Length: 226
Image (cartoon, rainbow, N blue to C red):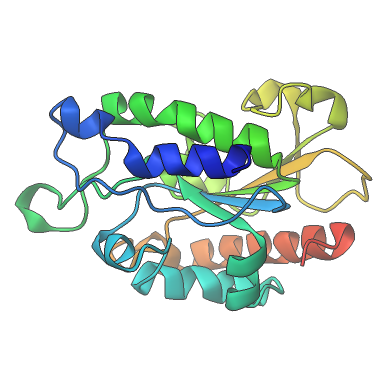
């Protein structure tokens, strides 16, 4: 087994959150291998993702892949070639009152974070797509409104990636167009595609999503990340 397969076996077997008393459904959900050039990071799997063992399997996935297909990635090819994971790997259960899924707490995120760091270090993606506020918060200030983030990306030059787990915003440059660089990494945020989120439905926000999709298409074509 190679390094990524060993890591994935560890993630599948992990019970740290359950042992700590967090209300989760054990069973890590992710897909992809070390050859991926794109890494998509979500918040946490939902109940259908746990059943199917496939990230973004249900309604959220349909909307997400509408965006990605508009950027030039066909769903089956994206799933086959690229890496999909999450801030926390196991289903966190329903939220209070039974509406939506529970947002994983800080302690759960901390327990799972070493896995994410190792995924990034092994894959070393050229493009990272952060989906939803929990994933966006890996790089951007948690207080930053989505309207100030969606439609732009951060470019990290090669010299900033000596440690590939690079989430220091000051080491990158905020951009709105692909710059034709030959190396480095782009990190681009997208809103959560859940149907429970009303943010993407507002006309002004849809325009920002369209800008993000157009930028993804530029990066995909510029770096041949098909």
